Amino acid sequence: MDSLNPAELSYKPSTGVARVHTTPVVTATEDNLKGYGRIVPGDPKNFPIEIVPWPAQGRRPIDKNTGDQGGVTEGTFTGWWSGDTLYASNEAVNDRYLFGWSEFPEQARANGPTTPRQHALLWRANYHPDGGQMFWPIKGQPFAVPLALPGDDVTPEKFTAFVCDGSCGLYVHPNVWHGPIIPLEDRVELLDRIRTALARPGVNGVLGTPDILEDLLLLGALDDKVVIGSMNRGGLAGTSFEIDDRFTAYDADSIALAGYEGGKMLLRIDPDDPGTVATLESCGNAVAQLASRRVMAMVEPFISHRVDGRVRNDLTPEAMIRAMTVAAGLGTTSAYTWLKVPIVADMERVMAATTLPALILGGEVTDDAEGAYSSWSKALQLPTVQGLVIGRSLLYPARGSVADAVDRAVSLL
Image 1 (cartoon, rainbow, N blue to C red):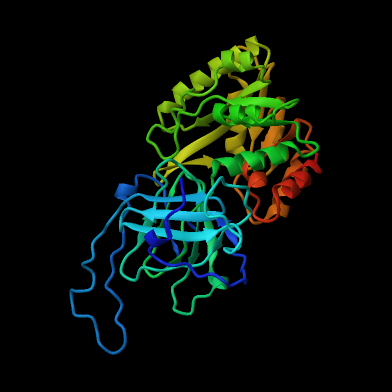
Image 2: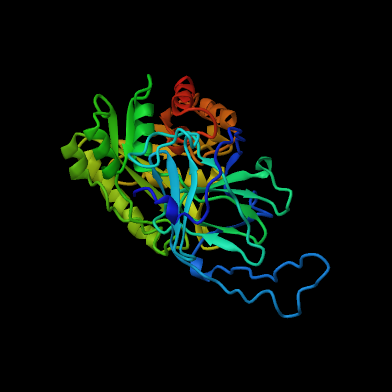
């Protein structure tokens, strides 16, 4: 999208100040959002929005039964990067914004192609004293929102940026300060981060959907790399059919035709969801079809349950052992089957439950990067663990550059 005409902007941005405060970045959870807001796990239309009386100012009270008649409004809120500048439009109130930059505003480009960025420099925040506000990603896009607890003495040091992975929404309580919605998946930036990771010594491959792999192929980033195609993408996050994970991306024929080394499938087993049986059958067929072409079948298994309307993976040792043993039995042969598994408690006992080769997945982005590296290092000492398949944790590290994060992970191998 293009830049906005300055005359269209609802608020004129402040510039000329060169002091920057780095805000902590955390993955949003119900626990760390306490006091700020809530995770919105299911249908956003069924989520209650708080309406509270307008706060009294000074000695004059608000008249009884007044101050809370504002009602609820909704509309599409769109944020985008143009050049080095973050713009947004809000259909609910018909406003247009310039929210920030990836460079100091005096040097930032207002339009043109986006470029790789390590941060967003934001200049404003606000709060709503008489009602809550909910943000829901219509297309499952990940986003971040800076929040600070209520109070007129707010300063940049009091903000924390909460990241949502696109599978849920974020609700903000009345009076809580919030900055702008920051879109995290700029396509050009994502591709650049992947290319940076693939160019680091010791990184020998990539796993992705057809659109990502084809872009990387056109960019010449897949030469001499191991390529694994993602196969089942039909179980969209937040839907009623999420567990019925249909094969809507690669199939065995297209993987073999492309000359890729294998196909990856997600297998979530929910004992209470009838959609599980279709996914089990589809994964079993895919394992057999890949094996018949002598290419890897990478299975990522979980025992899953719906909690407050949202699919949650059970990461207990017992659940992972059960999921792995089910995955190992899929297909006409396990000769080409690999497992993709998370770090859980008691990894030695968990991995002793299978003789199949395994790769460690990265999981959620965490502030405790050293803790993640330590857990990966310990897992790599186990005899069946053959390497790492880390995505967002290295492409969007909480601190530092992509190259530094990738090099640190490679040093564990």
